[in-house]
Length: 306
Image (cartoon, rainbow, N blue to C red; front, side, top):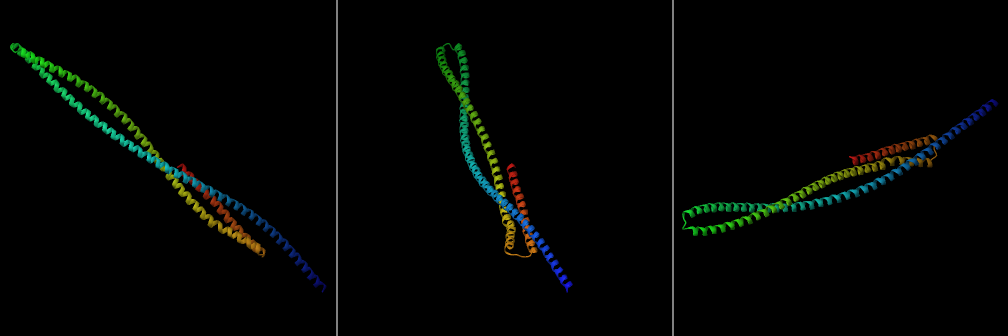
């Protein structure tokens, strides 16, 4: 009986010792799990900080979009001003072309008058030649017809008077011709000045057209960058609302179960593994989101430099 009692007592001591050792192991596991839980809580705080930082960055990008829209509106206004200036320039060019055509018509009329006057001058020269021939004939007739000398002298005097009149008319015609030549030179000079002004205005028009083309190209680049940036923001919002929500919900649900239930250490370990897996998913998405934002910014820089 004593041996049986001793064996029973030894068994109880062994069981007590085993239970103490199990309690020690359990306490160590609980301490380890609490430390892991604190680490996960710290990681969650860091993740929330990064998420807040990303939200601030998102607000900055939205502000930049507003500024870009204002710049786009300003560029559209500048484009309309340039178009109005081109319309005014075209109107002035049309007016100058009309003035040029009027002056060309005046030159044609002046040239026609000059040709007419030259023709009249040639006629009068021919008349003078005929008069000289008649004078020579009359001199011959004077020698032959002495009786007709008085009549011939009277006719000669008359002819001399006509000759003087025609000579005076030739002088007046020459003066008019010189005046018309001066007027023609003045008109030619005015035409040269008008042509120079027209060439200068054409150059200005080409410069303004080139500036309009460059402004349109920059405007198209800005519109394309804005569309891509808005699309990227929409994708980022979609990713944030779907990929972040699930792991955060898992972490919150498991934390609530840990606070509300007292189960075996295996269940605690399983809960902690689920929390760790959700935190890793959240961390992976955070890196993916960072890479996505960097890629979006790089695309925007490339669009601006292109």
